[in-house]
Amino acid sequence: MCPSDPQSNYCNGFMHCKPTPHQHHRKRAWSDRQVCSHLALLPAIAIAASRVPALMELLLLQSVVCVLSLIWHISRERECRLAKAEHVFAHALFVYGLVQTWFAPTAAIFGLEALCACATLATYAATYSSPELWETWHPIGMHVVPGLWSAIIAYFHTSLLGRL
Image 1: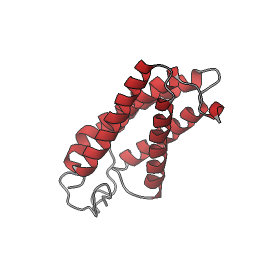
Image 2: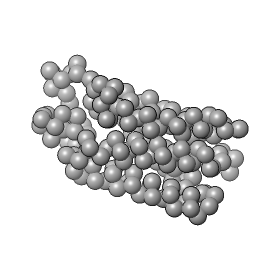
Image 3: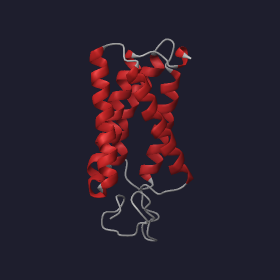
Image 4: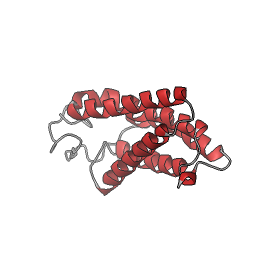
């Protein structure tokens, strides 16, 4: 079963769906949960940009991931070079979040960020091994929760670049 088209068996493995000829032109609407859930990524971008000095690494990473992920989801998760770039940046953002969590300014913030990290990782693992859960849980666990996590980092943390 293909997460971008649950009615289709035209896949060469999970998350490597090739659109059938009649699907090739179909795109997800802006109102689709996979697309509109990207709104959850925007507050962290705004907070990171408004900081003095700006939290540039989060601002850049989150912005790139948001744009690439939107393109990937609008295209119904078509695997291509752009998708590979999106996956690399998304994983980099996750690792960045883990490192920032390690440097959380308080135990309470650490706990909240650790919960976000665990929820994101659990969603990734569950939807990877169970594609039928992907349409429902991916927008929540891979867009909304990471958006909250990034917003917490943007508000409470300082740049990792200053730690180098």
